[in-house]
Image (cartoon, rainbow, N blue to C red; front, side, top):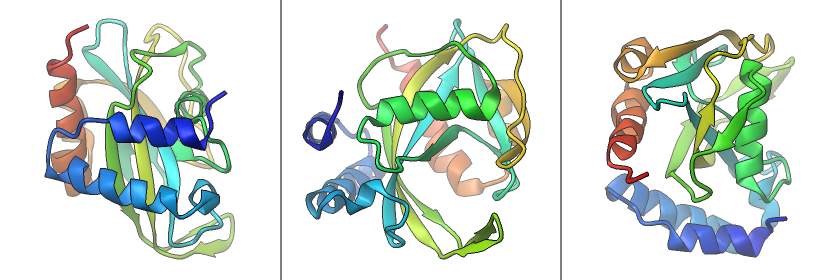
Length: 192
């Protein structure tokens, strides 16, 4: 079972590939040093989230969901909600948001880091103020032969995309240009 110290060690060992990851690693470690409030979404300024960049067995397609809040195709993921094992969070969220059952890590290490801004919005009739997601991304493998389904309270569509087509489907310029392109580049440079 992973704990806060394990996550801190994994974050410290993570090697950034660009200035964005460098800056975000520093901020996430700073917030983690201020106590475990960042594991809970009740911390309205910033809290931890985990995402899965879910690829198929051939690693030439990615599984995405059409996000109801952002009105864009996006990776899977969600809040830590007190969980310290963020890899488990990423796997659970991938299963819940897409309906696939077979989700495994390509590697156990953190694949990417991002500090993401979340604009204020309504969820389940309550207003959620603008805040930061201190996001840890894992590279996951899913079975693209399994049946997929939506999770109606979070997304309205789920689908597999080629790596090129996924970029064309995304409506959020910053996510497309800074995050998803980076993830594809990291995959292309993997030595597996």
